[in-house]
Image (cartoon, rainbow, N blue to C red; front, side, top):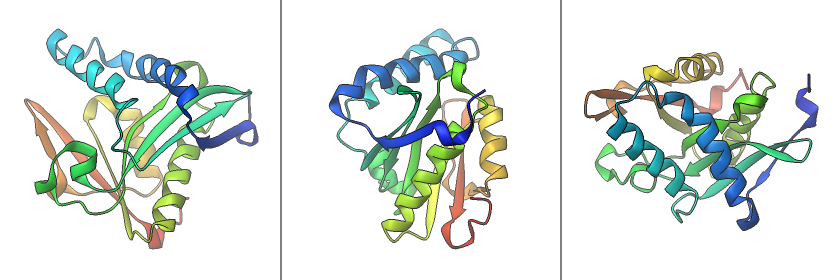
Length: 176
């Protein structure tokens, strides 16, 4: 089993896009059976389209032995991240954190989150946000273990699904 020292984190390049798409589809593919077919297809299309979007301020990837095995996007606001200015999040937001199923359990998601935290602090932010849902229970456990707290007032409703908001106060990131 690989240790955390073998994980490399860097900005994605244009040449990485196809590998990022593959990681996203592998990572999020586990939810295909949970969502209704039309919901899954729209979700998958949005995930894949994110690779070509110009809205993230950073595209961060994780490599293990030279292979891209994880990625995340960092946005500067809820308008940039979701097209929802009314959500009024004016601080960085992590979206589409993904780790290839074959590379899970090696600290890759934590390494990506730490890099997002570092960048948010560098931007002068006091908080870092993300949204997730109950179907991503292992991700929720990770976020909570790392110190993210529920931000109920920033929740989003997508049809029947409650997309829960989490916030990390960057001055007190003792778990990172």
